[in-house]
Image 1: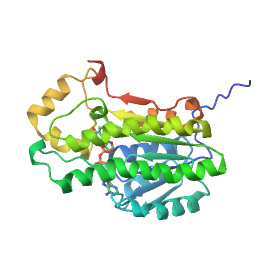
Image 2 (image 1 turned 90 degrees about the vertical axis):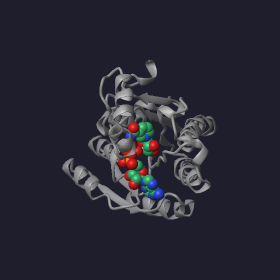
Image 3 (image 1 turned 45 degrees about the horizontal axis):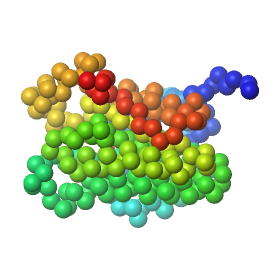
Length: 255
Ligand code: NAD
């Protein structure tokens, strides 16, 4: 078999990334554009900053404004995304929220708001794209953003831990059903990354110090740190990888 030396290129592919306006989602969008993909960002707010980063690579970017707490937006997202570049080949379920609160005080509203975005949307958006991919028999890639709390319990974030544990479980469950359709479902579990998601944690001097002291790499991660894993899992190089959650954590889980 001829060796393809362009295994990591995303040239000619289209990627849809949720939560594309900030943090890790923005970093993944920029990495995909740099690897040659057309990028669609689904976000609550304008993705102006993301669009500017992508323009710097000469890449193509389209935004879809949508509130991802409500699964009723899914048909519009799929329609607009398919219209933008013909077909979506890569879906990154990145949008997510975290609510910090003692377990005894968590309200039903807070619980549901975390589960709705972090878990329910991940499943139903994946289902919507996979339906099309099974039907046209051209395959696809799904990359879910999991967490260290897919492996560990965390402190004062029970709904987040439940949702991210579900993301790792779903990644395996969907891979089992869809691998035969040439759909790769995998996940990235970021460690402690300097984004909005961890702003409160980094402001808490004691927790921040505790966390930093157990990261073997000796620093918080950045959106650029997950770029390589995101491109790899979206590329032909990952064709035979199914249902795996790849930790990008500066060594956190190795401790
Ligand atoms: P972030 O807060 O910058 O990003 C979250 C994104 O989700 C934002 O773009 C936000 O607009 C979007 N979002 C939230 N609610 C939405 C809604 N209702 N509709 C549409 N979009 C919505 O933080 P981040 O760290 O970049 O988080 C990205 C993902 O990475 C999340 O799933 C998060 O749980 C996960 N994660 C982050 C870390 C970390 O240390 N930062 C670690 C593990 C996992």
